[in-house]
Image 1 (cartoon, rainbow, N blue to C red):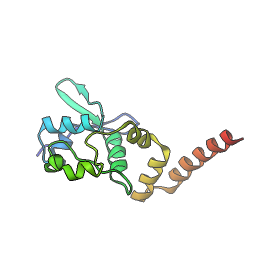
Image 2 (image 1 turned 180 degrees about the vertical axis):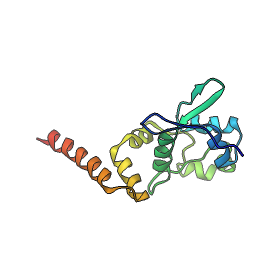
Image 3 (image 1 turned 180 degrees about the horizontal axis):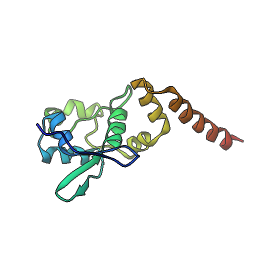
Image 4 (image 1 turned 90 degrees about the vertical axis):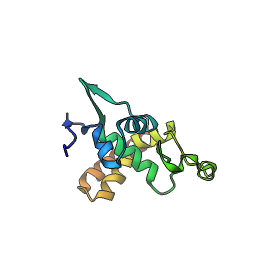
Length: 137
């Protein structure tokens, strides 16, 4: 089995589309539908397709954390389940989900959940708190 290619340009990994194919056991066509449903634009290099793994992780984190509406991925058996749709499960990422995924609080929550260096969390949260205080003054 060949591992997916990755590139890191300093802002996070760009990962070959085959990462999704291998991870979820899906076809290339379905992997592209996953990116489309999550509103992640693929990057085409020659005959290879890449995507931003940090962006993918942030959006999936927002979709799966407590209080989220739930999400039905393309080609899921649950796609035809009307009960889930009536409960509010999403089939495509909304603007609100994208805005939340951009938030520094999400990065802080993700870092805390993975046990990463707490100094990064403190910097993110304190920078946002300082901005909020300036707005209130």
